Length: 374
Image (cartoon, rainbow, N blue to C red; front, top):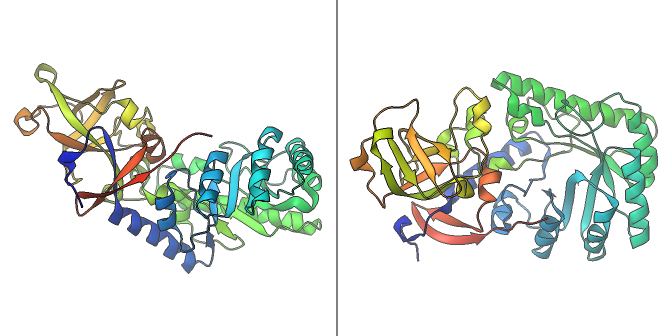
């Protein structure tokens, strides 16, 4: 039986089921139109129920960022898993255990040293674990730059366990326009397609060509030569995505419910019980044109109210003020009243909580477990 938001203890993580389902459907349809496979990244959700709504097939494929995610999702029927973090030998036994149980598990490397370590550790476990070579398409993080001869050294070290190439256009989060994101998407695609072609020209099979970031997936004009797209935050969206023009604020599916616990009238502040332990310390919008503080304040229907933002946060206290200062009508926000706060970074905010309170038509219809750990 559905209950009202006033029945929840605060702070609480809310998930609008209709928005989640719409966001997931839109991404599936976009990638299907381009003829490319979707391999959703479940690190955002860390929830079996959410992942099932992201996919047409209940067994995968999925992308994970922790082995704990791989184990948890495999236990619930997802058996096509890419562990998309550079692997070290110490982690191979847990991946091998999944492989022995029937999982199709793969990982990534970006050096010959890592490739040799993977091969030796997998051999000790009596399994084969294929790997994608990570390509650095934008100078943002890890990987081998396109055209670097080390690509062939890694391929040689992997031998028959070379599964393909992958990249993540993390620098797309720093683009200032949607045109810039589209250009980044073209750069991302070119980096992996050219790397795959170079490997094939040297006689290496390279069946998988994988890209992934929500902004580039949203604005890419072409996926020619790409076999799969890995995206995660699109399921929920957040204020960083809205600031990039990837989504509208009203499409954000997650929020944090908090209670007003105090008034600081001389400062024009509301104090809530949703501090950084509920919202996270992520300040991703600080680099964008519109700084949303620690989160954008909404009414119980999820609509932004009075241009209020969480301007500061302590461990268990959120400080709410009007953007740029200005008077607050405290009569509208009595002690004990409730607000919803949209997050800067859905992954980081959700990570602060143990469950989603699932909303349907504004009421709590279900609770979905989420998990943490590595």
